[in-house]
Amino acid sequence: MSLSKTIRGKTVHLEQGDITLVEADAIVNAANAELAGGGGVDGAIHRAAGSGVMKELDGIRARIRRCEPGKAVATGAGRLKARYIFHAVGPIWRGGTHGEPEQLGSCYRECLRMAAERDLRSVAFPAISTGVYRYPLDEAAAIALGEITGFFAQASSVEDVRIVLFGSDAFRAFQNALDRQTAS
Image (cartoon, rainbow, N blue to C red; front, side, top):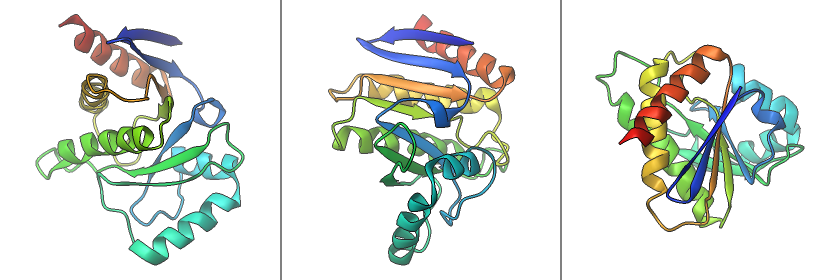
């Protein structure tokens, strides 16, 4: 499944598939705060990218120790069809009253900002925090697409944002949120 919409002359693509196979200037990894690799999207990206990415993260961890929720760091992309991986740490869902919406929105803003700073044209995101961190899909989709469409109002090199989703439930949630964003 896939769907594309043009917003302010820029394009949002929703697709169901494997983010490690996507061609983009940057791919976003749903990382953990320790930047130590893990399961789900994080594990798949590390396996596909190769050990060089973890070596870069070792150096970053030596400097910053950990990456707080809502923040992101950049590495090279190893064997992926990208130039960079942006490792964004999403919040663990604790009911939505512990700053989770702001932290999740910050993940998307930080990655889009890093892409613009590097003069990149395309970025591919997973559905950050919706796996083992249990962020509700509908709420996560609304936040993600709100941040992306809001960013499109700014002048930037970023013209193409892909959201690569695992499963039909995630695709439907993001499709509904995109429809709501573009209806107004």
